[in-house]
Amino acid sequence: MGTLQIPVEQRFVMTNVDWDTYLTFSDKIGDRNIRFNYNGVDLELVTLSHEHEKTKKWLARLVEALTEEMDIDILCGGSMTCRREDLERGFEPDECFWIAHEAQVRGRDDIDLTRDPPPDLVLEVEISRSFLDRLNICARLGVPEVWRWDGQTLRVVVLGSDGEYVASERSPALPFLRVADLVPFLRPDPTQSETKLLRTFRVWVRGQIARGWADATP
Image (cartoon, rainbow, N blue to C red; front, side, top):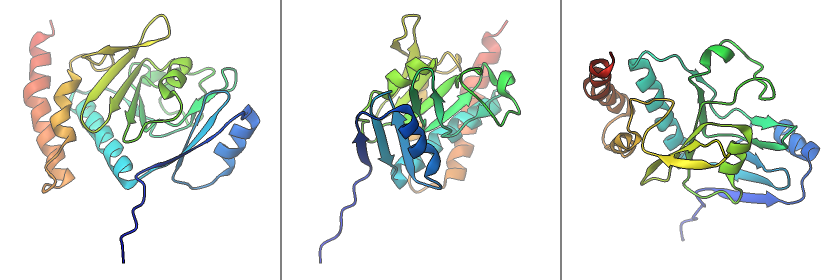
């Protein structure tokens, strides 16, 4: 008997969807393993694989450990729904963080992007490509920085004054970091536990980043 091959991720697109229909789908479906992207016309539904969720959580743990070691205040937004009715745009990031604007949303349970700043950093794991232009949705919502990991390359894109993203070797949110240096830690030794791998990463941060940043700071 053959082995059933289940797709890593499945994507479905509904066209000519209005804002109220988008809200109905995103709000009325309870506990789910589905992500929604909306560009004002099309609604994409994405099922998430274990590989995807494991990878995005590991990248988030690296960011969390890095900011802790560097004593940087952050607020983790996870995969919260980011949307604005006035722009008719919405999406659910793999992970997101407030860093520069952390103090403005600290302790808040009712973040509203019509009055509050968008996340300073969004993480995107692109095991499969979205049918919609998620970067365009991020740009319309004013997300200043996105990290894109496709399993091989970690790319940083930064929102310019023209509303378009441009590539960058460094993270504006974490300027002491050359993001490509994280790639070896995104391909961890599968024989090691995440706890041990994270401990190794923290040692690297203290030796290679924290010390160098302290020496370079007047």
